[in-house]
Length: 452
Image 1 (cartoon, rainbow, N blue to C red):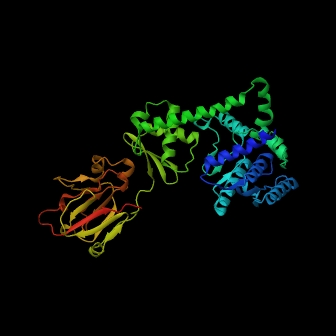
Image 2: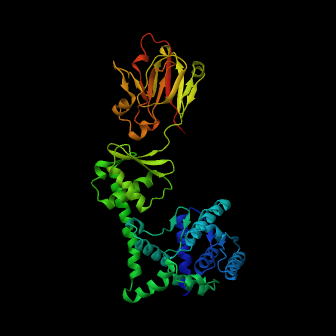
């Protein structure tokens, strides 16, 4: 690499830093001791960027691994960088694929140290060749077009400023600037997928398909366009928190999977969805209303009458009947997210339920409704099953079990309280037996206390 070529790597790095940070950042840099990370570390030194170097020594190559660590620590000291070396125990990998375990452990350590040192990002020396290999592996593993975008320069807390540079650019930079580095002998073995792509597959393709790497990298643009199209389709059939089945069922099967994945990822943080799991979830659209499939922790995907929704698996905080006496309400009583209070001023609001307190028999009981429960809804002459009333009021199947009833000492049901997640302005239905009249002197008001 000539002088101008040497400067271009630093210019590329400087430009990426300027694009990604409002001011000069503090970076935590992963440094293995190989040419890529050492070139990045040296270029950061030349640009006078504040850096904490982090070296992970798995100890797999004995003395060679220790020499890698010595090089990183020595050059960090020479270039004025703080350095941390960490030696994780490879025994912790157990029966797990070691490469996967090592990668997860490496990034866990990076993120822990990023927080400790209050760094702005984690700098990684991934380059153009790594990007080609990443996209190839996704293709060979059958990943959809949305994953062809490969790695991004800035992704969450990872900063990859060298993605536009080739491996040869980096080697030339090291040679021109006498940047020391070490070669990991295990990278020459083809037993790992990425090494096989580097040493055998790519070398064979060069002779048959000149410029094939540029063609692979163009797939990243196709992947980006595909992702935007999927997002547009998803937005067109999502209404608030509901994926409407009328539009969804008209999609091709593979498109259904992509749209459902996009819908879930927009609503649920840090969710991991395998192809098999997505295929199972797609089948939910043909299930009976009320069918649910867990997707993450306490979160479930639920088939409603005309839509698919994401809901909490927890049915209610009121797991057993709660007794409420008159004195508790006088001082202000809260149960679940409900607030009970007396008011001697007559009035009506859609924001709370209003009951004639003089018609109540204390103590009151707040509990989950059960099959067979009946009450006389406001405005009706006869009684009605709670289950039928919930259906008539179009309470979602997934929310029905969260509804509560308020009853008196003799078991008479005074009110049916809808779940907070209903989200349509309906707090519930009071009984005809406790409605307010001109003779009402004291009101019992029931409100929702919205969570912070």
